[in-house]
Length: 174
Image (tube, rainbow, N blue to C red):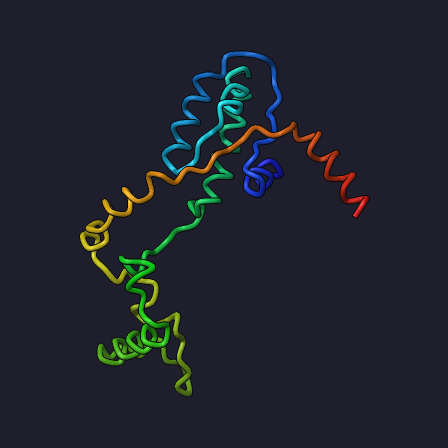
C-alpha cells in the first residue's frame, strides 16, 4: 500500500528487492500493460525488474498496475453522461430542470418525498446514460488519436527502506 502511494505521488517505483533471476518476461508484460493505459516504464525500471526472480518481479508488477489503475480512475465505475465531454455538457441547473421535467412528464413521482421534498439523486434520468452505445463510440476514434502522444513515465526509485529513512529525517527537521 505504501509502495502504491509513493508511485502515485512521485511516479517513482520503490526499487523492488528480491533474489536475482530472470524477471524479463514479467517486465515485458508489465511494459505492455502500462503502454496500454498511457504509461511507460523507464529502461532503468524494466532492467531492474528483469534482474529479479519472476515471483519478485510479478509482486512488483501487481503493485505498479494497481497504483496506475487508481491514477487513471480505473478502480471506480464511470458513467459517461455526455459524449462530447467536456464540450456539450449542459449547464448544471438546466440539466437538473430537464431531469425534473422528464420525471413529471412521465408521471414518475418516486423522487418526490413527503411534503414535496425532491431527492435529485432519485430522479429517473440521474445516473443513467444520456446517449446510446453507438452515439458514444462514434466519437471514439478522434479521442484515441488525440491521446496517442500522451505518455507518463514511471521511474525506478530508491528502495522503500531508503525512502522511509529519508522521509523520517525530513519529518524531524520540519
